Length: 425
Image (cartoon, rainbow, N blue to C red; front, top):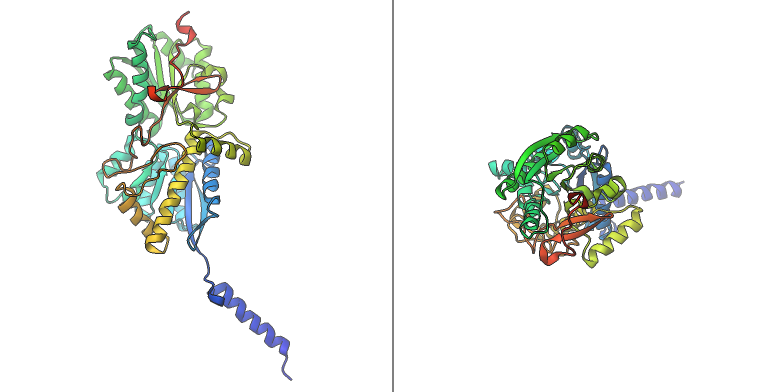
């Protein structure tokens, strides 16, 4: 006698096989997957910034249900740990074990410089890194064909294109009689990284061209939090301006607070002090009158994003990390959709074709961002974006009570440059 139950079980097994492994039943095809590696400092001294990056990318891809055509989008972390050697190790694991088809963002210049060679080796296109250093451009221009996977690899222009705004702001204040500095001496400082040295070198050159005297250049380890000897040296040199940058919130806030403790009577340029949402909790009132050059949540769309971010994550976002990451994610979505439309498939090869032939050439731009009017690359600027009033630009702001007031350029100004009271003592 035939056991119908056994035959039934066997039939069900066949059907399950067809559904799961072949995806043939009723014309339903199994979903394809594209893997996007989000690169950032998710552990280490800049983990707070990394959390904003990761959450912003997830918000953007959640908005499209993590789907591009027939493809599911899988976001995976590529943790740089703020250290080039660790970043390269984790990148290789993302390629060989997680199968990333493209990577995006990043935070540190030194990390990006290290990852350029791996992107070339594995032929993985990289988009919209937050690294600014000139070293990336120099390396790219040495061999554009080799480093074409970084065609759109920078989402932060080289310091030479942005830091001049600080010099212009202070020089105009002197020329207009708004400020009478005790001297024309400037001290340059920064973390001892590609980013810190690039920013320091660029702004030093710009100050010197404007007639200022650079009397000190000092670079320190990223995690340093004791600056009293350095600040005392600047005080003895009677510097009217100290200008520099750091990517570590605890280090940067310590420098700003200790400058006030030792009575340093200088205008402080702290490029990137506001890169983290809770920066004022660390720096406090010592940040009053400090100058920064940073994007703002100014548009209605930006304000809505800021409110949504706080509601979803119970965390204050920074325009420089969360805002740029959100714009970068949405620009990448546009690129992936274009790739799917042109080729019907998403992989490193097809994505790179769009990167090289459409994004780099300026034919595929992004105009719906929350921070900039338009993100655009050209063969003349790549891997940097185009910088200008209608493209990528940061205003100079002056802090008061934890809020930044735009003071330059004049068409955008919300207030006037204010001289710190200690210059009048």
